[in-house]
Image 1 (cartoon, rainbow over the protein chains, first blue to last red):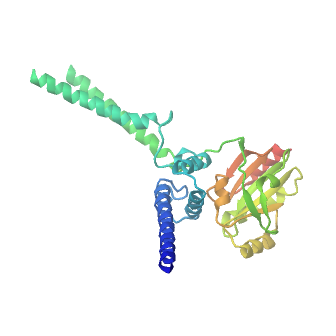
Image 2: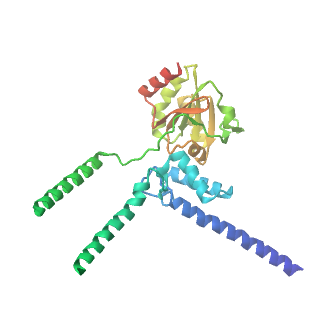
Image 3: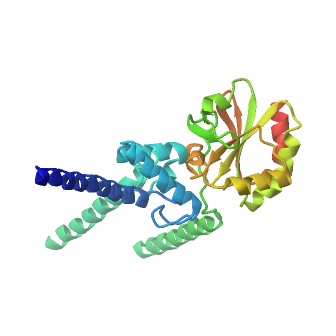
Amino acid sequence: MKILKLFFIIFFIFSFNHLKANNEIMKSKITKNLRCLICQGQSVYDSDSEFANSLKVLVDKKLNEGLSEKQIYSYFKDKYGEWILYDPELNKNTYILWLLPILIFLIGGAIISKSFIIKKK
Amino acid sequence: MKNKFFSIFIIFAFISVFIIFYKGLQDTNLYTPETKINNEIPSFSAELFYSNKIVNSSEIFELNKFYLLNIWSSWCIPCRQEHSLLMDLTKNKNIEVIGINYKDTKINAKNFLNEFGNPYEKIIFDKDGTKAIEWGAFGVPESFLIYNNKIKKKYIGPLNNKIIKEIRFTVK
């Protein structure tokens, strides 16, 4: 019986740790994708400014409240605008950014394949 | 013929690239978050500075009244500059000044208020800076003009005479 109890305690501690660790990984993932507005060019994760530290606290709080990654991003986007995210979403303002590389790639491919076809002839 | 066309194209491309980069040099690369005018004020619960009571934001801001929400801190130098202007603004009965004490200790903040005067009707105590984030602020000082639970205007940085004049004109 004692062993069973001990086993349960150990099990609980481990499961709790696991939860905490998951949150930590998520937190660092999210803060790496948030731009610090004080020291622009640095992520919130890298920065130690007052603003970045508050943001880290808030991300922690939101994760503990059970919000998903997406919900947290949209929360910050709502407060500070699209700029705060390092990874911009595909929308009407950013479609050129997303589609231009693909377009250039396709055009380049077309030019190369065309020149190959001409050479073959 | 083809060669001539090609060289003209190259020159044209260089000139356009030069113009784009030259224009880009003069652009500021500091981004300030866009302010959404007429946005609803955030709802949050916060601790009041003097009474230590936890209140909801809806209890602080009433309808049909102008408020100036000022984020300040005792360690912030520009806040000292604008403080006399805030003190001046309290003489105006049409507007109430609400403070958010940002990442400060109560002792330092109280010393600050004793030294320079207290223009704030109520002060929200924001120890970890998360309340300021609710407002979309990212530094001190920052001020918001609020009417009917909506943000009418946002001022980043210390207030100056011109802004105060504008506020007075708005609340008249």
